[in-house]
Length: 192
Image (cartoon, rainbow, N blue to C red; front, side, top):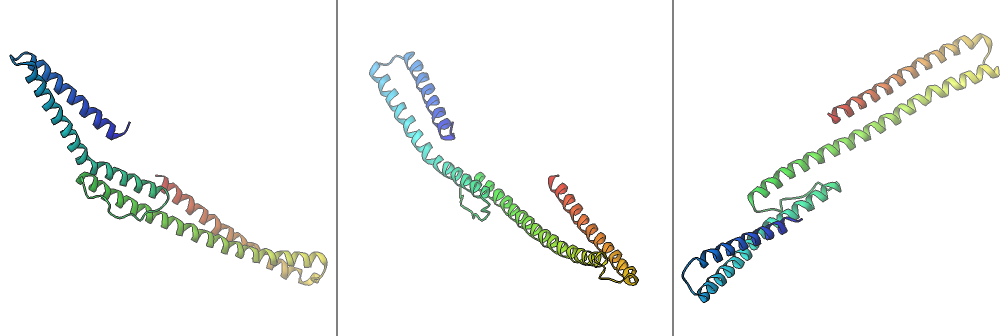
């Protein structure tokens, strides 16, 4: 049930209780039926007028709630730019300010995350390129040895080259492993 419905039902119930109390009280008095009817009509008119004034005063509350709902929907669509829309009641204005602060912090977090993901992608692309170069060198050297293109007396020199390239690959793989561990630590921190 909506807040507006609760307020209307509550107001109608209080109005009925008031009129019932009036009827019981008026029946105990020594007045005519016409006077009782007149008093009840005046009480009913006053209650309806009070309800109308109440709904007019609460219209700002309902419109503020609608604006807050729109802001929440905008954030769920990653639209973090929403200005101050609520002027009253003061409690809702305070809530909107806190909400805007949270929205700004979320925006910064998402931008930081996006930038981090971009840097990670660039680093992985660079490491992939750096790994491919020694692999190509090792592959070419091994094919040269196997095909007999490299003379027997120079094989030792080329095997040393393969060893250096293998060490370089191990260093690059270790760097990649460190990047992976750092990402995992950051993910663990974000989960906390």
